[in-house]
Length: 107
Length: 197
Image (cartoon, rainbow over all chains, first blue to last red; front, side):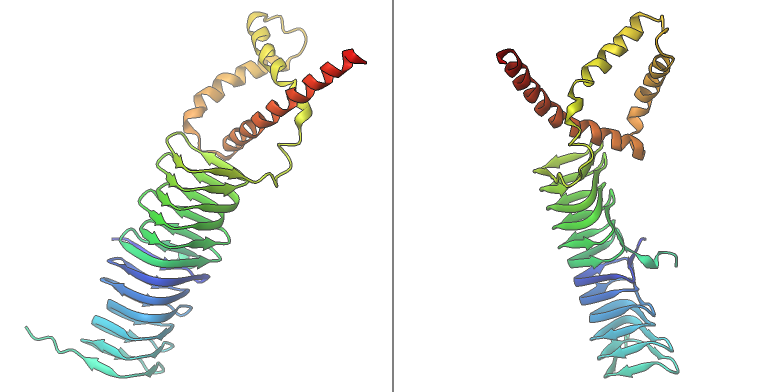
């Protein structure tokens, strides 16, 4: 499986979808909906509705986040927006503002 | 992670919108929208772009439906397909590459076009070759046999056409053609005027 990388000096304005792993160093505005892992790196910023199998935030996310399996915010990550996920990890030092809705998957 | 200074759209990714980069952009997946870069945009052989491309350099090994505006060079590889207009100062089309659209080449690059006075030397080069082939006397210059030995090597290299010096050769010869056609016209006029005087 391949990987999509948004470089640190790149801005994407629109919808990003697919089954690749997505790594964001730059800026993504709009909507992100991936079937794989989404990583927002320390120099990355997502101003979008963000959905992935797992969402890992080291940088900044502004928007609604859905992690079908897991959402993780690293110590220097910042996340503002509602989260819907099965599991969530918020590290010591991370900034999070918003509601958390945990889907309890049964069966 | 080596590639933080580069954007790469994976083969299983669809971007619907605009990409604006100050670094290289490589596209394996599917993009609908404008792709801009201050450096190079590459559509890889598994990449497809439906939209405009604006960049310094553009390399197309995949499919582009849309126009290209480049300030440096456009290269269409043998697997590349472009359906749209291409506006660039330098253009390379590799054997097998396809273009359907207009090719507009800026003449902002001064070097190749203004050397119109050398319309004549083209014929002599052709005759020189035949002379060296028939007369191996070679007393005049030692360079001519050398030229004839380099010729076969260039012929064998042609199919591998990706090296840079070769592509610049192609550009030069292409740019000279229009220059050649305009130069004889001026020569004709001059010849016509001289007898009258």
